[in-house]
Image (cartoon, rainbow, N blue to C red):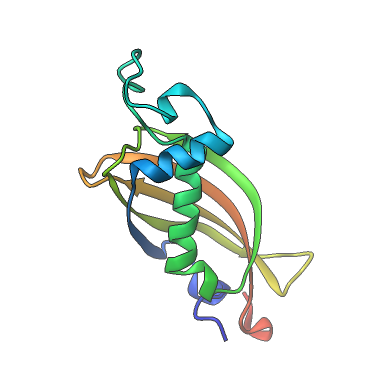
Length: 153
């Protein structure tokens, strides 16, 4: 039986994830394939202070966060996926050498009316760099099975 089910993920539950060291190579490799904007490929780009120098694509950052969440708890859970993102913010560039870590906090959790063996959770995920600066903030709408359907709320 998975460690985490709806019964374990009530409002206020906090789940840490990470850390993950970000490398120049992975930033460039992701950018070459999926987001070839110049500031994701080289550190010699001039421009806005936010984007000066090599930085990871926001979508790459989301992928990194997803992997850290999977490793921390999602792969050992009754997760049945998600309906999507309610919010996704990239608040600070992720640079080579950054070490990311974060925390997921359950904002709300309720048993599904149409599928009582499942639940719907709103989860806020916040990710920080090594300087405790927020680099990414997301709210997801997730589906988890109940461990004990007869004891559901």
